[in-house]
Image 1 (spheres, rainbow, N blue to C red):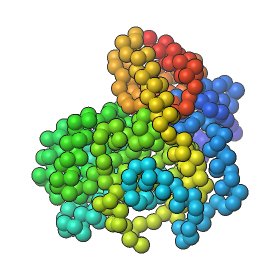
Image 2 (image 1 turned 135 degrees about the horizontal axis):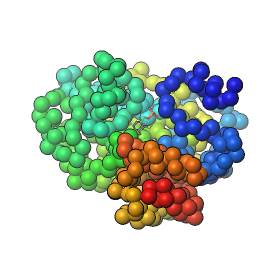
Image 3 (image 1 turned 180 degrees about the horizontal axis):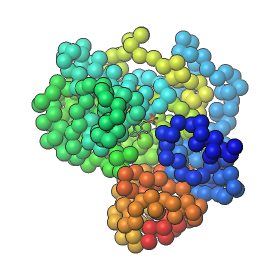
Length: 386
Ligand SMILES: *Cc1c(COP(=O)(O)O)cnc(C)c1O
């Protein structure tokens, strides 16, 4: 049987896949089983930060593979410790916990907020506020955190203690803080799956002030926008706020599974031995890959992200068939006159892979995509929008 038939027969039908089998890639190019090449403007949903098979990343991962692949967290390993140091130095956070995915990073954040509030204010302070239209993962707890009802309906009862405020509406958050005993607030600097909606700076700063005043743990979910994609190392940095907890995953290890929950001054000693764990978490191969990625997210690279972002915004603003464009850095959502799915299919036909987010066409290109390739992809996408 061919791959598509095998997949249809034996892999759980949890994904609506595009009709493409990817067999290899190099940089911003991907190749399918029929030898057709595509410019990749999706990076496996913001994962392959430096595109496919980046040389430096391969070298780092391969070197670690030849040393050892896994130890469990019963032993010390250098890549894990060094990556933790690197992340703390770059963010001002104090300690990190490593898991394997975005959902797992958020689970850790929620446990930290609840334990802090329980010890400081009492066990009734367990409520977590998240925003409507947010996305925080697929486990039963991160689904409860996700502010979109259609994800909830079939899996009741979800973990209790989550309420949802309106994004960019501080009063809506204040009302919930008055009504519930709140442990934490979890937000995305740019709502990704919710349609690439950036938070207003004013709202984010209001959220941070409110959280500080009420001693509520402020948690930034940087799973998608994090790791350079925003044009800053993390998206919250663009909003001029300092969260107590930052979670990330997707792009962190450049294509290997790695999740991370970073904890600031206030909460860095909340977790004690036995409170939390993950067998694969902090895996040395994934951490070696991440070190090679984070090392290169420097000022120069970030300013290139800004330039490319500006280029894309300029190209689509007012273009035929485009209603509006929004986002941050190289995480961009375009509202098209045609249904987004149609535009995605037309792009694929013409050799460009793009994604959707709600009713938008979503672009998540490699951060180091060469300018000529980006221009070429943009022209094809623009034609598909017309
Ligand atoms: C993708 C995503 C998650 C979930 O990450 P997984 O690795 O799929 O568990 C959580 N939060 C945000 C903002 C995401 O984009």
